[in-house]
Length: 207
Image (cartoon, rainbow, N blue to C red; front, side, top):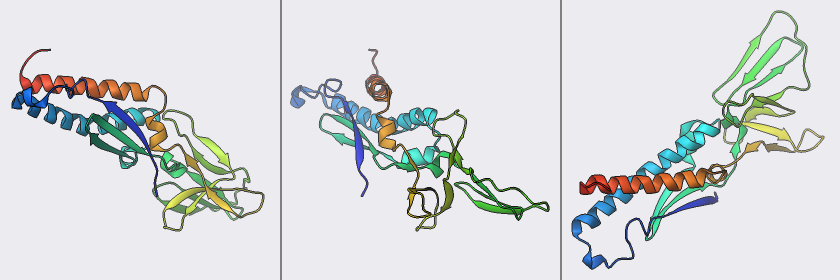
């Protein structure tokens, strides 16, 4: 069962929720409701863009780990707390054998090519990937790419000197990325600006 990391955006003051709802004109209440809906729709997209600018992940994989929830006093952006296997960070792996066979794996496919001449094996080969966008890929010696129990390609490493047991090699979760650095402040600022500008647009007035 997946755990989650929550980023709460407090909107109580922005939508005047403390006022007597009976005294607020219906058009303003409707504008506020629609504005909150716009924030709920745009906030995950902004979070996905912000995370994708830092981490070497496909946009779809980031989106899979995000969700929004609306409460009485604001919006919560929720990120899954389960770590992401290194295969999702663009990991590749080449295993070279003395027979001249090169087997290459990535998160999309597995291929094997045989060359005429013999090739020297390299015991230091391992899965190569970079978690941060723009960083040079690093070889993690002893790790490799293979199919897991569900048939999907994953990066594994040995947890001891023996061949077994094996364990998956994981990077940070979407939940951890969501709370990393100044990202929470940027996303909260984005949510408030979006809410305010959308209310102004719907009500047809200047701030």
